[in-house]
Amino acid sequence: MNEKVLVLLIGTNPLPNYIVGSYLRENYNKFVLIYSERNEEINQSSTADYAEKLKKHLNLNNNCVPLPLYDISNPKSIRNDLGIFPKEKIDEVHLNYTGGTKTMVAHVYNFLKEKFGDKFNASYLDARSYKLVYDYNEKGVILKDKIKIDIKTLLSIHLYDKDVSFEIYDTYSYKKKFADSFDDISQKIENAITGGRGEEFIKWLEDPFRKIFKGPGKILENKSKFKQHIDNFSKNDDLSPINKFNNYTPDFIWDILNAFPEDKKINDGKKLWIPDDSISNNKFSDCIKDTVEFLDGKWFEWYVYSQIRNKLLDRKLKEGEYFGISLKAQRKDSPNFELDIFIINGYQLVGLSLTTSKRQGDCKLKGFEVIHRVRQIGGDESKAILITGMDSSKKDDLQKDLAYVTGTAEDKIVVFAIDDWVDIGDKICEEVFR
Image (cartoon, rainbow, N blue to C red):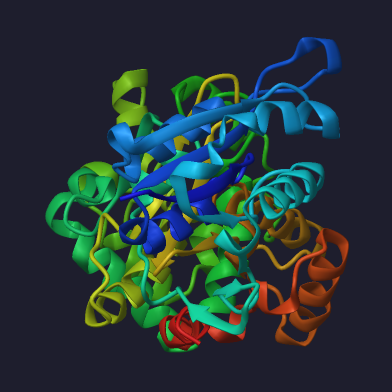
C-alpha cells in the first residue's frame, strides 16, 4: 500500500499541531513535520525542539519524517528542501497549515498542490470556532470536545519540562502549614465573602493589615526590624494602623484571625501580637510569615479554587491534570511560566489571575500578564479570566480596553469585580463551558 501522508508546519505554538495530529493520526501512515532550521546568517531560530516534542507526545515513532527548512523566507530554498517527497509512492498528502509562518504556509501549500494535484488536500484549525476546516468542506469538525490535553503535556510541547509544579486540594501547602485549623480558617473567610463582607475585608487588608506587615526591608524575618517598624507609627493617632488594628477590626475578622493555630497568630486576643525579647528571629518568622502570606493574597486564590473545584469534578475534569492552583514551570533560557489557577476544557486553556486590588492600574497590569501567559502555551484558543476587587461599574471598560490593547477577542478575556465574588464559582464555570 502506498503512503498517506499528514504534513504539519511547526511554529512556536505547537498546540494546533498536537490537536490536529491527535485527531487525524489514525488516518495516515506517514507524518512529515516541517520546521525551521537554525540559520544564524539570516537570524532564523529553530523549531526543531517543538517538532521533537510533538513526535514524542503524538507517538509517531518511526513513521515520522522531520523536514527542516533552511530559509523560511526564501521560496526557492523552501522548494528545494521539499524535494524529498516521492510522487509515485504517495496516495494522499494532507497539509494542515495552522502553524508556521505565512511564507512557509504559502510556499509549502503551493508546492504540494502543484506536485500532487488531486492527491492533495489541506485544512486549518480555526481558533474562534474550534473547528478543523477542510478546503473542500467549509462546515468543518469541532474538535474542542474531541481532543483533550493535560497540563503537563501542554507545557511539555512548549518545552516547559523543568520544575513543573502546581497544587491540588488534598495536598495544598497551607493545609499542612495550618494543620487542623485550615478548614476553619477557609470556612470563616468563605462565610465573610458569601455574606457580603468582602469589601469590608479588603479595606481592612489594605489598612491596617498591609501597612503593618508589608513594611520596608525583611521585617517578617527580623524581630527588631518589625518592632522598630511598629514603633514608627504614632501611638497618639487614633487612625494609625496599630490603633485601627486594635480598636476598629470588625468582629468577623477577629473570628478569622482567631481561627489560626496558636503558634501562627498575628493577634493576641483583640490586639496586635508584639514579640517579646525572649523570642528568636527564627521563632518570630515561623510564627507570622505563613499567616501574613496567606492573608496577603493566598486566601483569595484558595477561596476561588474551592468555589470551582467540585463544579469541575462534576464536569468530569480530573484534578491535577485539567485543573489546579499555583502553577509554575520553567524552560531553558526563558522566564518562568506561572498561573494562579488553570483549567483545561478539552484543549482550551483557561488561565485565572486574581487580585484584591480595586485600582485600575493594578488590575490592568494583571490583565496584560494573564493574557500573555495563556497565549504563551494556549495560543489563540486560550481564554483569560481576571478576578479583581474593583467596582462592577468599571469592569466592562477594563475588559474592552484589555481586548483592544492586546488584540484579544472580547470573548477570550473576562473581568470579574468584587460583586461577583459571592457566586464566583458559577460565573467562572459559565465562562469555561459556554
